[in-house]
Length: 179
Image 1 (spheres, one colour):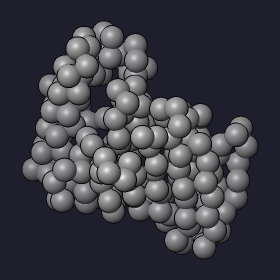
Image 2 (cartoon, helix red, strand yellow):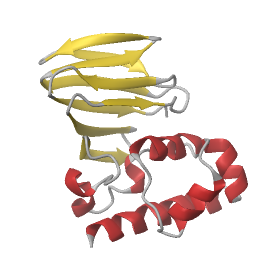
Image 3 (tube, helix red, strand yellow):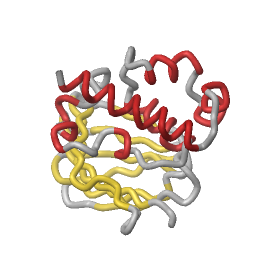
Image 4 (cartoon, one colour):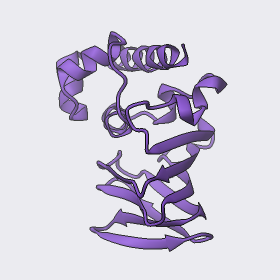
């Protein structure tokens, strides 16, 4: 049931944001790099986007990532979110709030998973703090290794990514959007 609610929340936010901006599916596809067919399937609740796809949509529509699913506390549960990406779990610690312009996630990568992301909107900054395990973060066209307790900050308006160097890596990801 929660997966259906999750799909409905994403669909509603996508359609609302798109219509508010006066965009057709075709124009939204061009802005986000996500096909018109996929956007239509998401809006009709026929498909759940992967994490990478949702980031492309959020960036293209200049909205926060958590705005798509973190309005209801039960949708923040990592096991229910993104069933198409089983080796990455995202727990929303703080959903996006306009007064702070940040959102905070606890991310768990398992089975040495690598998650690559396209560039976010200009000026978006990510702060990573490793809670458990070993992780490497890709930005500025190179990998940066981190261990438990390490932190790093980078502009995520460029291709970037995360890879668990240990079997499991847990980290906090604080995303700051320009005001």
